[in-house]
Length: 244
Image (tube, rainbow, N blue to C red; front, side, top):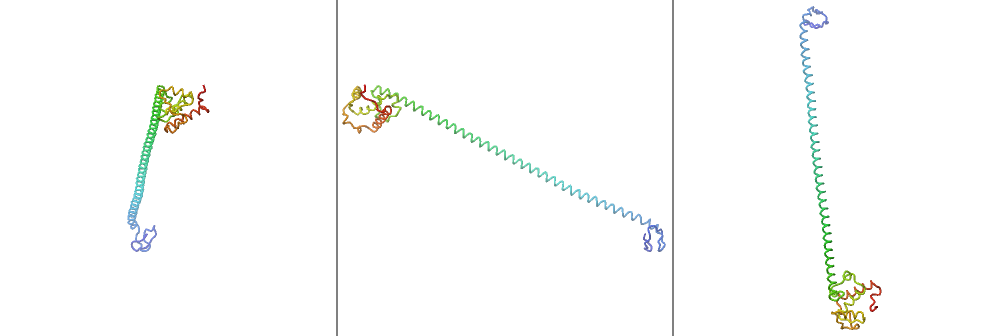
């Protein structure tokens, strides 16, 4: 213990200064409270500092945690928005795909309906033509029968297979020679001569050796050739005149 009187540093247990003999007990009692008060202040300050440090650290971590929570919330919000946009895009794409599919199906249905309509139109046209042809053939048959001709219009238009349908080999031969008879050709065959002489329209004025195909029109020439081809396709030797 240091003596206040002379400054000598005495041992802790000394009651009197070893140098000057001054009593150290009273001095000790006086110093003790001061020392105790000083230690209290230090402890208090230390506690305050520690509390401040703890509060600072806690505040720092609170701020960090709070910021982390905000960032996490913002991240979740962004993800939800992105997911919502993605779902919206998918819905729009599905809607467009459905619309395109419906358009394609409508086009296919329209094309199918058009094809069916065209087919029905063709069938109706074919049926009409067949009906008209049938009526024409019937009319021609009636006309042939009433006028005494095998084919009364052979000098007017080109003949087809439908014009000679159901005709026999002999009738084909007669129809061919009928084209010549209409121009006044005389026939050496008794069969043909008798046949055409029986017709009111026949006027035989041209001998066979004087008759020329130049007297025929282009239509008559083609029809005579057509009937000849049909005749020899039915029989390789054609119809045999005067056989009976």
